[in-house]
Length: 100
Image 1 (spheres, rainbow, N blue to C red):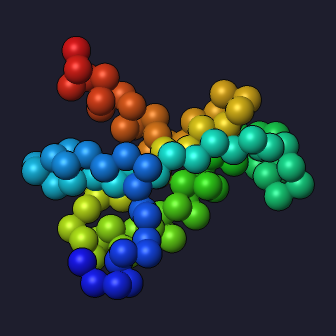
Image 2: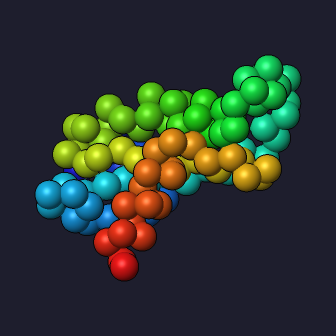
């Protein structure tokens, strides 16, 4: 790995063989203040709005690095008030089916 990659950390959890042998970089984030001014309008009408916004930020930040490494980038965002990001929900459902 070159110097540029040694400074990045696109995963809190790296799953070596997630889907069809492709590794997955899971980046976990908790939105502690989904009612802050930047989320309040969307959060007032959409459950998981703040988590979805954070998932988009994580994909933008880590997606290119993960793609370059051949990893799937999976942002896992949850709100303190029980909202889940779509990707977090999908990933947890997939994991539970594999474990069942």
